[in-house]
Length: 130
Image (cartoon, rainbow, N blue to C red):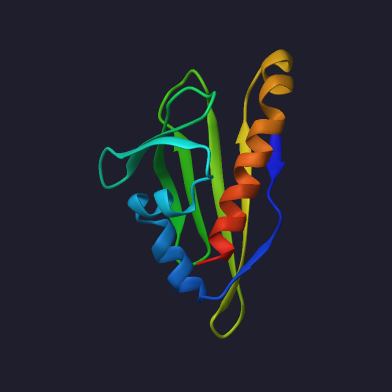
């Protein structure tokens, strides 16, 4: 299952957005209002929970300097990645998009598609407010 957020413009350079997203503690600032729990587990891992959803542990999997940050689920039960692409559009402005890629059976995909789409749209929108 592949989902994409809207592309958003952040009034920061690509380097600043990249640096923000590579510090896992910063994700608390862009979580949706439905966040019930957020906990930093290490320099590369954090746990969060949204209303009506199970706890999810995300960890940094990979990064490309100033253009991409890839997070992935720490659990094999929900195998997915969340990739932030970052493009400098002009000095001090970066366009960012979140891409969700997960492997789920058809029934699970149908149940989680809308909540996940709303989640990544909310993260992107909150990122644009920085």
